[in-house]
Image (cartoon, rainbow, N blue to C red; front, side, top):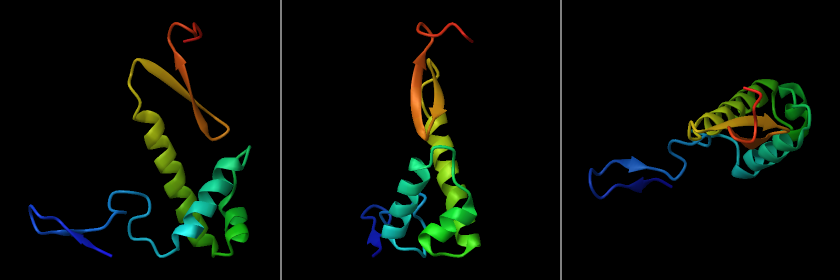
Length: 102
């Protein structure tokens, strides 16, 4: 359901600018994909995600690409005074004072 901006009059939706923009899958499928993707300890292939969700390989490939892109963008959006390492799907913050390995 598109919303309308009072200032400029352009239509937009709540998913604009997110990985859910221009989606064809249901939100339930996206959330299931996120849960499966995050809980996979060694990562998950697009083929396996497609099997788990019951979608085609191409759909699963695009979905995994979007999820990886969103995770890397979230990791690099942190302040530069901290260094982040991605471990098992969750970012772990390391401060410069706690780590002398770099």
